[in-house]
Amino acid sequence: MLSSIVDPRGRSGGGAEGADAMLKPQRIPTLAPGRHPIARQSEFSSRYLWYALSLLFAANLFNYMDRMVISVVLPLIKADLDLSDTQLGVLTGIAFAVFYATFGIPIARWADRGTRRTIVSLAIAVWSAMTVLCGMAQNFVHMMLARFGVGIGEAGCVPPSHSMISDFFPTERRATALGIHTSGATLGIVGGLVLGGFIAETWGWRWAFFMLGAPGLLLAIVTQLTLREPTRGAYEEAAVDVPQPPLREVLRYFARRRSYVHLVIVFAMGSFAAFGIQMWLPSFYVRSFGMSTAEVGFYFGIAFGLGSAMGTLGGGYVADWMGKGDMRKPLLILGVGASAMTLPLSLGVLLSPWAALALSLNLVSSTIGGLANGPLFAAIQTVVDNRMRAIAVAILMFSSSMIGVGLGPLFAGMLSDMLAPRFGDDSLRYSLVILSMLGVYPIVHLWLAVRALPRDAEMTAREAAAA
Image 1: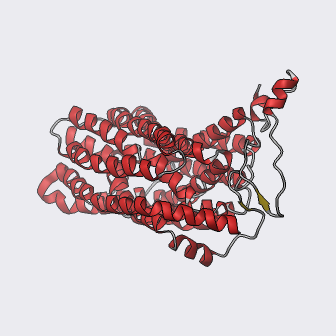
Image 2: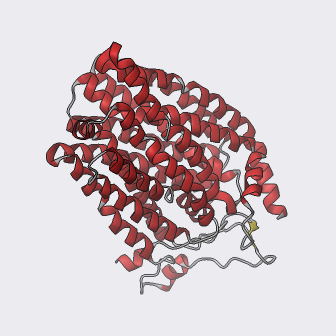
Image 3: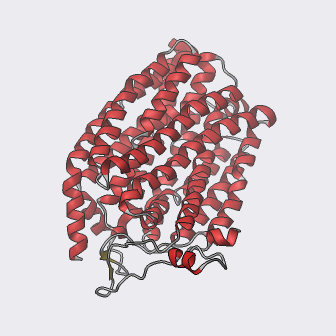
């Protein structure tokens, strides 16, 4: 049964000739050397496409599950290793982000010319092993070094995965596919919080890292053995098998696309507020409402993770239906509109006097906020050349990691320590309120990206046709 699923052409070793003919890929006519036309039919069967997407979905799920488990066990690590909020901010933010961002761009360059399947498999193995090592940490330095390794490994997940998905699926289905892949991240957050909280409460925080990190090693083997490499640019009429342009030329190429520049700012500044809040919300529920680690893992995991997953899946599907390959309208409605709605909801979460109300608003905010993910990533893939897709995502990840993931949790932790003499356990609450107010700025740049998108998409199509 497994062999029939993972065979990229869908052959199962038998069956009617008519069925084989339906699954056999259509021959692509030859144009000029180094070029191909827009594909009319995938080189893979529908069954295999969904299997491949499922593997990349699982990789992203483990990616975020192993990344986020530390957030739900922070109170236990704080007590066991005697750490300050500033040190916890370093562990959740900059210790991970510096290496995640630094290794992201060279790995993406490798992905734009190398075998993406191998890169994803190696990345899964590295971050899974380093997550296990987090559970062995005896002090702040040990934990910081292990988090360095998690960052290096996870840098190789999203950029090559997005590049592969864009070659597996045509433009009109790409937002849905990328939305499904991104929902793996949000469900991974659920897993990291729910399972991590339960395991930590039952067997201790170290076992949370052991039990969530180890299964990724098996996934790395399955990915390497069964995932197939798609043809680059399979759905664009563009040059293929040509040398990868130098990094300086790539950066100039991106700078000419104003929508891409604005989206980089959106991801950087949006992540500063969003990730800073996200990593500290479990501790906020513990301190402000007296919830246990297991309770926070379950209820916050459902409210935040499941809400984000529903929003991401729904947003990708609606974007494809609404845009038909043109992401301007979906970005305006699902991006700008939804992002503006999440601001008052986030403040409601942080200022609520009751845990039940805060969690309910958390669910609504996460669902609405997730609507933008699919069209955002689809828009990026629309305005860049197929040889630069992984590096385009990596630069986004670099900006969001260095500014958002790296500094957001650290800023929140330092601000909480500063406010603690006056507000006590509520210092974290008001630290996150201040951080959430910064979420207005990226919405402005998202609006500017929407305005520039048609021009940039036309420029990319014109340059690809002339290449």
